[in-house]
Amino acid sequence: MKYLALALSLSLAGLPTAAMAWSNHALGTALALAGLPQIKDAPPVQVESLESFLEEEGVALEQLLDEQEEYFRENLPDYPARPDELRWIPTHGGDHRKAFLTALRVNPEIKLAYFVQGLPGMDWRGHKLLDAADVLVFRKLGVWREWRFYQVQPGETLPALAVVASAADEPDYGHDINLFSDNPGDVGSRYNFGKQPFGDARFEYSSQAPFHIGYYHEDEIIYRAAPYLARTYPEVRVQQYLGLARFAFESGHPYWGYRFLGWGLHYIQDLTQPYHAEVLPGHGTSELIWIALKAAVGLDSDKRAAIEQVANRHTAVEQYQADWLRKLLREGRNDSPLLRAYADQRTDGDYPPFDGESLRLVVSQESFDAADDFDARIAKWLAGGQSATGFSQGNRLESLPDDVQLDQALVRLIRHFGAHSRNATRTTVP
Image (cartoon, rainbow, N blue to C red; front, side):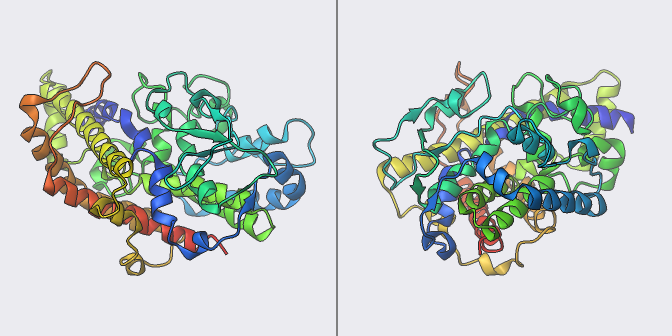
């Protein structure tokens, strides 16, 4: 059993792309929600500073966050309780913004800039263009320099869609990095999440993986061999943020209602990516045990191959989907199956109303069930372009040929992305 745990632990070094589930969440969210009446017909909202929101609603927020903590302790398996010393107490002096973020157990160094992303159909001329470093906490900004961030000011009015869509990308800007006891910084020693259960330390954002991945449906033998796989926390974030969004709407703070909603949608959308719901797609339990046994006697070639395979396929399909989406938007194409999938509401009613169990029992189960077939389609697609393609010096795959079967699988998964985003919005926005 311990060898299986070791093999799985090493294989999870193949998760460096966990930060990029379906690439830019803002684009996908804008496409998914643009036709939803709760968003489309919403009046413009006024930008409000976090400090103003906390000042006005601090006492009620204390009760809300305590109620959330009580619920998590009673209902979420393997939940690491928030230390009482981190409670949000509005009457305490000091930095209220930092105290609030600490009570949520997120990275208190996040920028929380007042911004919108440049989205299709929205004109932000006259607004200052922010550098990615003004919005994200990372040292290496890479792909985020491709996005366009425009500064907005408290008091300015914005379309609801711009707020929620822009916010849906934010949890990838550093919300969940360095929260474990063996991470850099001092909050990990206070937050009670313990040591980082998995991830590749070579990547600056790897420590966020346990918050953006939900391994809920593996065989029991996998959890017995590697109990750390149960230490994944997207449910906590979804319920925190959707609860805060409902509170903000009900108390008359629509800007923060839409912004918290966007944060919550991010984690739901992450779990529509099969590589965020199954540990090693394409590798059954018996195969993992065989890999572990071989590695235990020094024959680790299969283990190393599994690591590379999962990393390459996850990276490749994320880039393929992102490039396809950007190409369609650049060309002004509205007839593509991919664009239609984001906005397709025909299957929304096939799911129960979104609630506290939906992320585990509906969203991640659906992705887990699709994972092995999705992985096989990616493998076939990559094999078809192997002779002419490979990783470039920038660690990005060179262009690969289009693939009809992979496109069909992506369209189905993006339809899930849109449906779950809308259903969560329906149960959150008044």
